[in-house]
Image (cartoon, rainbow, N blue to C red; front, side, top):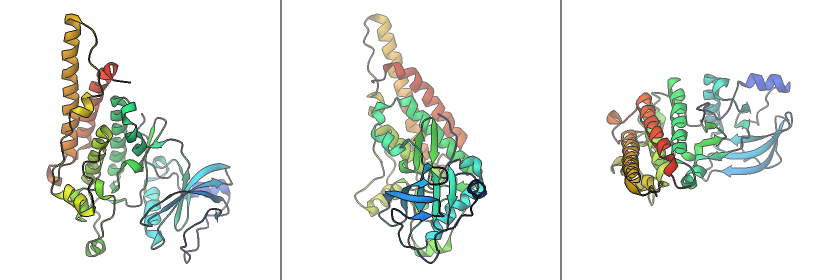
Length: 337
């Protein structure tokens, strides 16, 4: 699994301009009506199908055709109100990080972003089918996600919306999507504080992100820890009946320990008889317990409520995941297909 690329988009806009021989013509700034199927953007991108529309009006995502390259693309639109903030911020991150980190970027306008259409599945879909995927493969995915976050943090950005829906798996590559909420490390807004408006996905947000504290990389690792728990169990441990309960789960309730059951149930006992089989069974059980303890300790460290004690050293996180990966690979022959 290649760590590859953090993505949502690609090389600088100038490259797309050179390829098309056209300058990007954004949608009129004065018109922020919701786009419709059939709309032609920049005389190049024709919208063909609405594939996602957020309930809160934050964004619409369309499948479209690039008439210049004759290839499918995806077009993301910002919100009707203040559309430039979301898309403008996302393209700003792209420009600062450059094309090497965003290989599938094509173009953008005032309130839309165009990226290459990728075949693959979201991590949310993989979680639904996690029992069909060997555990060492899931851990391999987790390693790639952490490496990707590390690249983002090295460039002094905090993603602020890490969740399974924003992780895409395409063959042997991991893509981290949606940089609309990404901000520089240390970012703090008096306006946001005064508004008291929480921005992000509550069931994955750290307590300090909920409190609108200055941003730091440990916020992303907290979200990633919640996501890891979900990858191994299928359950988000911070979910609740309503928004208030979710917030309480983050700020007041300790993270539940990763249970042994979801790990142990993946492996069948040694079916042989005699002393050798008994020894293999003892070794197998010890390996399962070591694997469980490694993953449980890692998730607990990444999801501590107090930022100061939370695990935020990427080398330490990677070391624990690599240790778990080796244990899971050795146990693979016992794994139930």
